[in-house]
Image (tube, rainbow, N blue to C red; front, side, top):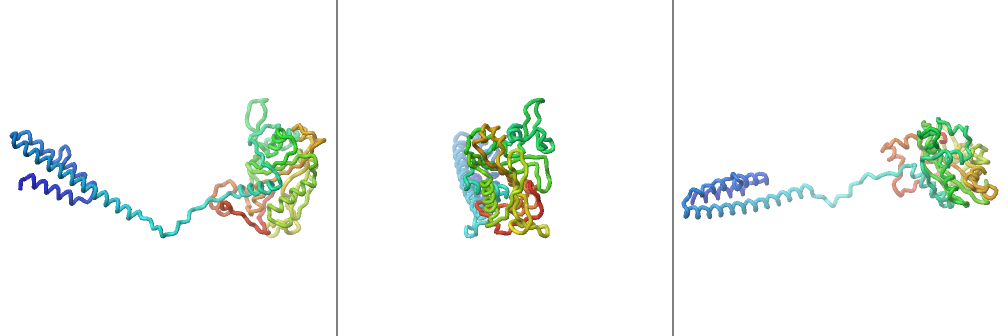
Length: 364
């Protein structure tokens, strides 16, 4: 056996014994690379006689091809082994049950939002929306709010900076501005609710600089105070899921309604707990009244022909009452533990029964 045959056999044995792709590639480089064993030996062909060079060259090419084929074959074998090992490690047991995934929750504010829209929607109210940034006319003047009214002062309202003597813009203090915008564009009959964000300079356990309101408006020729009372009593019974809720309307004052009233619902306060629909105590829940003639005039609606009623409800307040949430500030803290406790599974229909309670809290 010639030296080249011995070399070929040795190299083939090395290839067959290789166990990793990295080692195999190292052998390929050491044998067939620019400075590999076979390459270096082929460089000696130039010094051989012609006939001997032809025979040696043919033998070198044969060995080179044999080794290249052996390396490629071994490479395929090792790649298949690696794939099999990986598949074995990553195998999925399809007989196992599906692992439970963390499920998101609907925020109680949005749950309350949807409930209120659904209730008033069944009464024929449409939803109206408007901008958070308002001008003084729509937020105050058109709502019959005097120039010296406390609500216009800086301690209650967020004013936006602008040039001197320019029109004042604010972040709206109430969604009533949308009522004005609707009446400007739409002649009676008007029947809308206006849910949305509002802003005032206040912050404590029951007040937030940003909070949510739902206001309602009906303007028609025959609308009267009895319609207002019937609408709100039916809403309270449906929202709190109670067959009967003691209700009273107390005279009050709002610049944009006349007469004006505040609506109280029956409750019981014992040991720091408040229960709705039972007991001999009262809880203020919303403001309402007949739309002031000056408001209708500001929207170019004749108050001698049309009249209407309006009401405003703190959405955050209702959520706190129905779902026993003691502090309004927790609505905005993005605490996953809180949302897991108070939130709702999508498409879940909440049921509170007849015993609704919360600790502390006053109306926004």
